[in-house]
Length: 229
Image 1 (cartoon, helix red, strand yellow):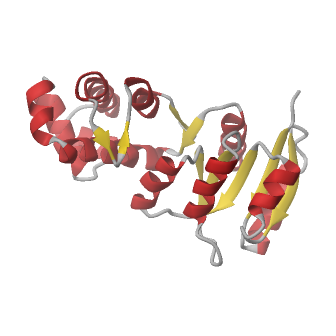
Image 2: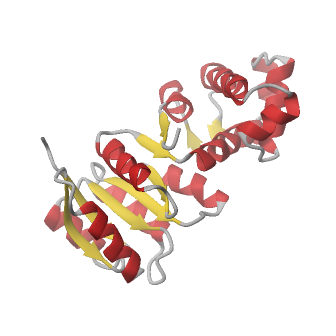
Image 3: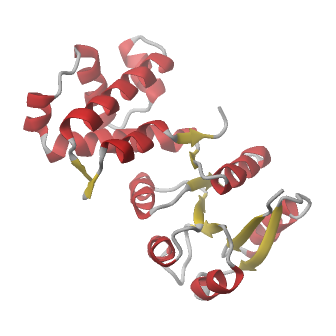
């Protein structure tokens, strides 16, 4: 069994010690270092070669987003999981764009915490359910705003799909959309999947300053895993 080499960067000492305590008994996770700030992150990654970096989103002395961007640039094989109590929704999209592989809400269950670390180490991208609805909303919203006329011309959306797009753009979750449309959350998820397929295959829109190919857009739409479901 290959051990997960984990670098922990958490500013709050009590939380940092708590994370260390709950992870230590698990033999498949080797915590190579634990730090209270991100100042020496790059030196530690170069020296210790962790395959997972567990990063506090709210570092006071470092911009966590900038840390993610630099780590992904200089150490592309390193997987990054960002931790926060309740991240600002706009941050979620920015961190995903920067290459973050997973999010852990600091009120997550112990099992979700472990599942996220192990799944990311194996190559999955993991978001908790409250964040994945927002990410889909942002992707569709950007697609519509970037080239709305082209979207109408080249993509044939059903009435239901157009309704879902409108509600997504208002920031509604799958559950809220389902209640509004009087359908199940599963049906809403199916509509979103169809919408993303159509956007990926027919419009090739630039989303949030990134030119996504069919494959990369499908990755966002289909391969992001959720914990807690």
